[in-house]
Image (cartoon, rainbow, N blue to C red; front, side, top):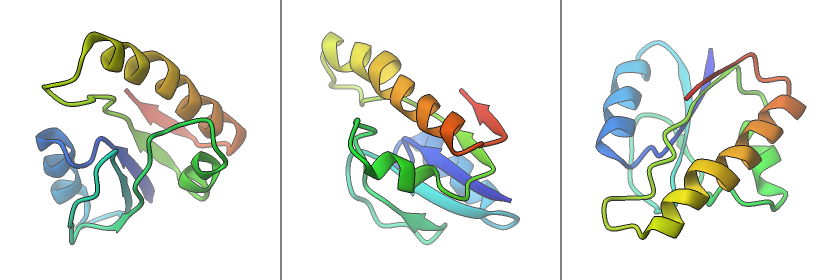
Length: 102
């Protein structure tokens, strides 16, 4: 199964990726670049640009952790949990992603 994990640089994202990488093909994304051996990494802000369509292409399941980081301001949390999540869910719907775990 092809799985996209957002917030992949977070402790939760890293743990989920490590667990799933043995059985599934992973695409990992985060706002910040990081090194991983668990799958393909694509840096993304989950913005409204065309890159989000490429991010969800050929994905069966999305595991979405919108966490903008512990030092984020309230506005960053609001944007991550609403606007950027909306962008992701819209792209997932358009790409016929079968399952989203939020």
